[in-house]
Image (cartoon, rainbow, N blue to C red; front, side):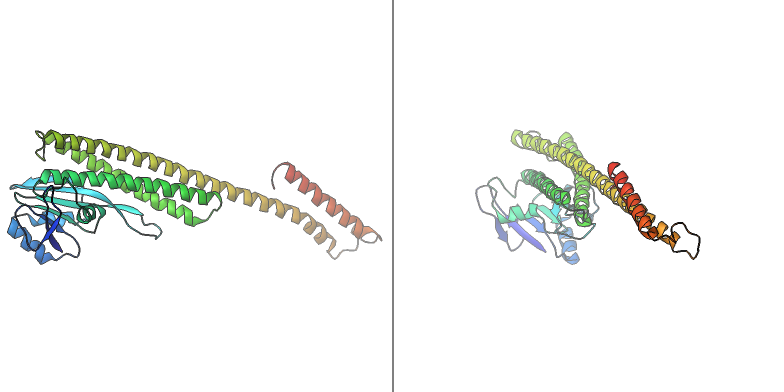
Length: 317
């Protein structure tokens, strides 16, 4: 689905019926291959730029060919998945294509970054200022990374509290899903930071002489570095948490097995004694005495109590 928008600095965002000079073209699902090919031919944009933006495995990068600037930025999304082994948060590429009169965004799924621009009017948003628009997308990308990282840390605390009172696998699976999300975040943040640093060094956005925009990019890179450090710290904490609970579960299992073994040994004593007196022999000690069975029962009780006391003293129970 291809939609056209236009906005000046002090004017509201307006949806257009067709493309105009200085407009923003947003491409979102569902996709029509014929429409993408037609737009590619009309604006003389390599079709690979559109398809690369829809590849979920595409790395963050930028390119320039025949006056067309292309940026692939990996952004965070919330998957809303509750399945085991599925990350709660993931990253997907967002393509930004800039030509002389248009700026185009394309993503494989609906995402909060584009939705933010569509649902509210940024005072400084100007669809004719492509460099500023790209910087605003970068800023929103970092913002949602920080928001989702705080959510991940909050969820981790909740799942830990649940594990303190329960040893179910469900909470461990939830922590594993968060761990996978953090792996995505750490990798993507590193790639995004590397790309932005290279763009700043090569002045890909042509903002070196625009002090306000240059400072804006510097602030974005600083915040991106902060998000990267947060994701690493949270990943380390989560890894340590999973290792700790794995050790606790293993220790609890060993304790249970130790208690069951002790109980088995104690129950084995009367079983051996009564099995001995259950054999078909005439000459067994105490068999012909009047109080013989009671003596052996008392002896069995004493042995069982003694073993129980010994196991309790040595904390085998």
